[in-house]
Image (cartoon, rainbow, N blue to C red; front, side):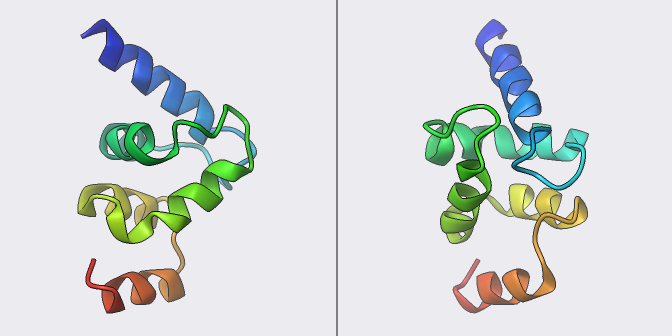
Length: 88
């Protein structure tokens, strides 16, 4: 439980850094924490590489994470269409 809370705290700081356009939403914290740990945890806090990593793994992200990123304005309509084309 403590590890999960720590992961969410780290993700919150990471997502609220300059690497993301807007403030992190509760949905991004909730639905993208696993995806971040699985695919992009090598990209440090405040790293501009985080956004690139999440985009690179876009087709592998969970549907809930993609929806949270869409709702937060982190995924453009063009990117969403591309993900749909790829089968996500």
